[in-house]
Amino acid sequence: MKKTASKREQPGTLRKGSNILLHRSDESSREGETVQSVPADDREKPTDFIRQRRMNRIARSSRDDARAEPVFSSEPLIAYTYDPDLARHEEVMLTVKTTLQLEKNDFQAEHLKRPSPEVFGRVAARPYVLGIVAAFSLGHDRFDWSLVESKWVFSVVEPYGVDARGNKMALATASSVRLIDMKSGEGRVCQNPWLNQGHTVEFSPDGKRLLVGSSGFDAVFEFDTDSGEVVWEWFAWDHGFDRSKLGHYVVRSEAKCKALEAMGHEVLLVDDPGKYEFGIPTRQKPAHLNSASYDSEGRILVTLFHQGAGYVVDRKTGDAQEVISGLINPHKLSRRKRGGYFISDTRRGKLIFIDENYRRTSEIALAGTPGIERSPQLSEYLQNTTELREELFACIDIHRSSLWLIDVKRRSYRGIKFPVEWSVHDVASLGRQHGLRIRGLVGTQFGKVAAFARQLKIIHHFSVDGCEVTALVLDSQDRQRQLDV
Image (cartoon, rainbow, N blue to C red; front, side, top):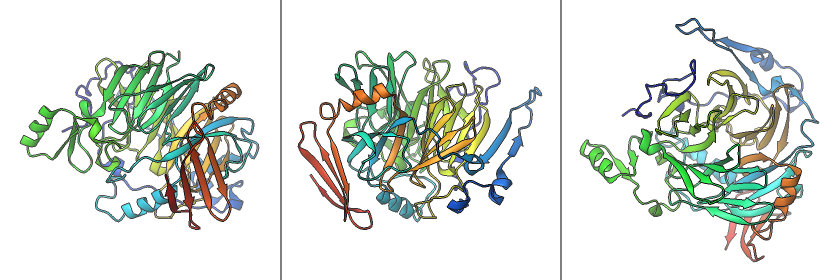
């Protein structure tokens, strides 16, 4: 069965000349590129590595109509100028999904020893744990475990995507989305039985809609921000993306399940999401949809982790067309402020830029950047990337426990270290007024957090009424030692 939209051969409403690519199932399972390390002292001067790749320009061949393709450039981040003053006046908020990243690293290392290691992710879903959302000035060079640099911080069950527009803030958590009016302090929980692990949230340009990319069941939901009701939804499984990399099918229809079983296929029927409190495990899902955003013409962009590709979804028909492929476990296909798009090629550690016709124009690679914190056997891992302001990008680098700030126009960059225990998921720009308003929600809408780093690392989570909910203690190896509830 072809895992694309049923009408994929029809270009639909995509503008003429779009880079509609054929899906190649083997491209998303390639191993990550070899990471070359560079001494920290050399990061501000050209090296042989930089000279080798600095202007590695690849001229694409013309199509049959002889229309010239854009020239594609690939450069390492260290080819840019290191600017110690870059973006120091900016403020952001980070979502830290868990403080158990080192356990996750251990799991990923063990995963490489299992059959089909190219199919990434957990075999069994795990219970949700408490994480944190915190605001920081980018004037710091490091964020500490104790959160001493934070302007405010609060506790929430596994925070994922976050966005703020006008007076509204949206935060996706394990099984719901918190939508808050920052001016009045009033909040609403946006829910749906199929909403689970909302990896991204994005307000529409007019702020009247909220788009949520939900990984738990490979779905997208659009909510009305006034009523909190779902006004549009899309399920990858219902539109051709229903067969996993392991070979089995995942469907919501009992009739379709029986038909596939009659053909001799292994099928997982998920007709009641309530039976899967923590969603379908990443490794078992057909797609692991991990982002949804608006394109320039009101259609929906989605990123499918296992397919290694980004797609444009027609809101009326539900058909999906592939616009970029050949990636390894990508994240967050989004629109650039100046036009065009960008996406994280996660396990290659590349930030890729795409024009309005979905053709690749350039990429920035993390390979060769110093500061790797994880085992050498683990690949690059560029999580979500966000454009904070025009041409200034913030990239979450799990492999180096760093937030990279990249000014594409000025060709400069700077890094901020965060604790190796933090599983940082998303970053969003934070205006001064947003920051002041959200600070007022700590203790009213959200519980407080207290973290200490003395002989042991400890983090305490409190409920809104001030009662301690959980205390997490890490041992000398920064692994979980105790979890009190």
